[in-house]
Amino acid sequence: MEIRTRFAPSPTGDLHIGGARTALFNYLFAKSMKGKFLLRIEDTDLKRSKSSLTEKIINDIKWLNILWDEKIVFQRQNQNKHKQIIDYLLKKRLAFKCFFEKEDRTEKNIEKIGAQEPAFRSPWRDFSKNTHPNKQYVVRFRVPSDPSRINFTDKVRGELSWNLSTIEDFVIARSDGSSTYNLAVVVDDHNMKISHVIRGEDHLTNTVKQLLIYQALNWVPPEFAHIPLIHNDKGEKLSKRDGNSSLLDFKQEGFLPDAMLNYLARLGWSYKDEEFFNLDQAISWFTLDGIGKSPSKFDIKKLLNISKKHLVSKPVDEIHKSLLQYIRIYKNISLSETISENLRQYLPLVVERCTSLGEIFDASAFLFEADKVRDKKALALLNDNSRKILSDFVYAIKSANFAWNSKLLNEFINTYCEESSLKFRDIGIPLRIALTGSTSSPSIAHIMEILGKHQTLDRLNINVD
Ligand code: GLU
Image (cartoon, rainbow, N blue to C red; front, top):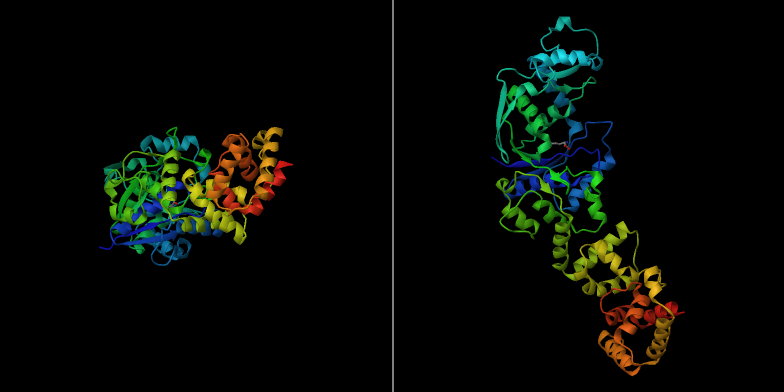
């Protein structure tokens, strides 16, 4: 049997970290089994689905390098197939038209219904056609009372048994005739020959409903694997309120896709003690048995750690390329050839100190921002005394004649300090502030080399006045 998984986002919001992880697990499982990974956009909720969001979700999973096989399926295009199945279920009396109006669902009514069954049982379950009023209706699935339980094996959670009296006669077609999520998913998964459905644990009751539909249609259901949810550090479900929770947030902060993928894979899945790996390794190691049963905690420190390891493992030219793209897209800055080259030279000095492209951008912003130091804290350190030291130094270095490279610059500064009875830091600190606007930066001689003589002197002149 061919292994076929799918990721089925509803385009009603940005791709959440949990959704990205679901996509990844489905992808890893399919690829580890030499199977296919498919993408289905569940856009049947006409009011909430937006094509701009579909595009964003597609871009996000592409960015992660999770690439799908076959053509994208848009659920909306399958509506006729959904309707045919709804009609079939109605014909077979496995579903029924329900004229029960929301307003009827007063507490009194619910109580009366609830006296026999904990979950909603529609009074229209057993009415025959000729008693139907000429009113709007929804179609509900007739949840069987015998057998009273449904059992299935979940690939993560093991044997599960569900009491059907807790499952309401759920709606499968809305009053406008459109299919609801549970019916559409079963029909589409069946038609797409999905062998395994891997999704968040919050879908467990949907799975029960979907299994009932499979049974009613006499279709073989896929295997199910429910992944535990992602929690914040308070042990609650990770949500928008926790700050960064959509993939876009992390893209904006400049995390590399490889790092994000690595971290997402480790959110609830493990292989031996492996913490740092790439996509091919994850594919070769992935099994459903490796998915844990308890919720995973979103740990930003761990992400930063993994991210740093990925950054330092990349060749400088690759980081440079990603950084230029990041700056263009997220900072809206196009760099000139010269500055872009300065940045490339600067990268080896700064990568080790950073965990993301965003941090590299901040640490190197002085290369392409205005020459004038704006940071107030740094400016405060440029007092009259240090300005005087700097201006004497500028005078000396301007007239000196040597090749402008870090080695000779270092020698020059050291000799200058000796001759002027200064400590290195007496010059180093104001020099660093005047050139980079910050008190911490990699070797000042390297920075002077990267900026070049002309720009170094320009910046010094501006900030010494
Ligand atoms: N559209 C559903 C969601 O985004 C898909 C759930 C499923 O995988 O069946 O939650």
